[in-house]
Image (cartoon, rainbow, N blue to C red; front, side):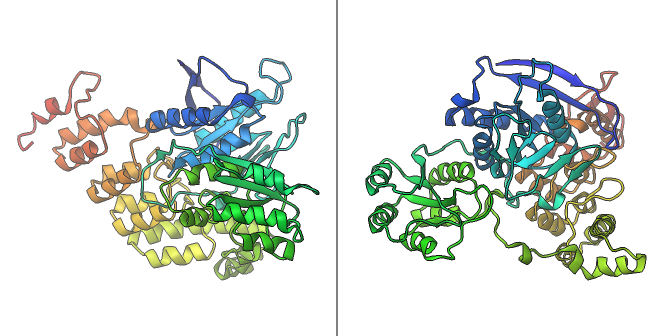
Amino acid sequence: MNFFLLIFLKSVSSEEKRIIYKVLTYTSLKDSSNIGMKDWIQMAADIEKHYFHYDGFVILHGTDTMAYTASALSFMMENLGKPVILTGAQVPISELRSDGRDNLLGAIYIAGHYCIPEVTLFFNNKLFRGNRCEKLSADDFDAFHSPNLPPLVTMAVGIKVSWESIYRPTALSAFRVHTELNRNVGLLRLFPGITSATAHAFLQPPMEGVVLETYGAGNCPSDRKDLLEEIGAACRRGVIIVNCTQCSKGSVKAYYETGSVLLQAGVVPGLDMTPEAALSKLSYVLSLDLSIEEKRKMMRTNIRGEMSVLPKQEVPGQLQENRLIQAVADTLLLTSEADLKAVSDTLFPPMMCAAARTGDIETLIHLKHCGGDLQGSDYDGRTALHVAAAQGNYEVVKFLLENGCSMYATDRFGHTPFLEAVLNEHFDIIDIMKETGGHIIEENMPDLVTYVISSASSGSAGRLKALQMAGVDLSLSDYTGNTALHVGGHWSGF
């Protein structure tokens, strides 16, 4: 590998951040058509190796198999807390009219400014969830689409982030990469006249998982007893078969007899998963140490935002149904959805921060049910987790972490919730955050010497202990060469 430094100094934007990034290149570059599971494992392992040193990651990848790689990485990266963005170009970046420069700069901008803890794909000014998109065109710059989920970010003159759509980790566990993938998986596409011999040959050992691409809303010929018998026999042998529609848009539903026969045969409905996501998920799930029934259950479960689990009419917290926001809107004579959302985005974060400060979990739950985003930030960029960590409200911190709030979000002062816990000497919160992957981010590194020296100077043993718990080297020296031990020695009580 080659490793070199690039510094990207842009004009200070409304987010008031400059982005510094490093580039890691592989000595042997591959056409994306040659990418395989071994390459996915290497990419994931490299991100894991450098995970604590950066706030986000951008992967440059060829377009042909980019959707497969994005889907695979989304499942391999467990409890991901930072953005991982794949991007590329339809026209090589070396050519004058390449789309690669805009795609690269857009991906770096998003990774450096927004804490979106997902594996995503950025192309033509749109950021998609990685396991929701497909390559749409071999020729157009608008090469990718996400038919069943709108873009997470849309860039134009302004930047629109759909924060309510972000999928966040909720387990109190640290980031890890699962590097074992099952290769005995495949795609079988139904077509009129497909023979049972074709299905029989495809479903034989060592095949363990199959994505069955069916017609319409998950239908197959209900009068083909020979074909259904082959599918049922494979399911009984322990092969996991997932039903995905051949249509780009829509979902698998067992409304008709032609769809219910597959369910009766033991086929798992894939809802609106893309074939790329279903195949990657099968490879991941089959590699886990679980029973066949547990694996089938996991294939039916939304684990990385890869499938829609609720019809739109059942999604709670719609703005028009929110009595609190509606009351404010009526008072201010607001009628449009955009105005209602603006009021919601303005009111909810301060109320959540106030509830976090007082340790009021019930109010946080109520505000969430009213449509509030627990990750929302106030005018200083502080989230409820910042406030709870600073106040030492352990139960609130635990609740917020279990609801996907990020420890890596920075406020206007560059502080993360983890740093707030450290500076305020809340040892129990430092412990739970470290278990969930918390660490000092790169942006805070220049201030560490100041924190260490000033703590020693003031005799704050508690602050020094908190810094040590966070992994800070207490032997750091300032510009004069003084360390905490030098300064602390001048204080008689230290």
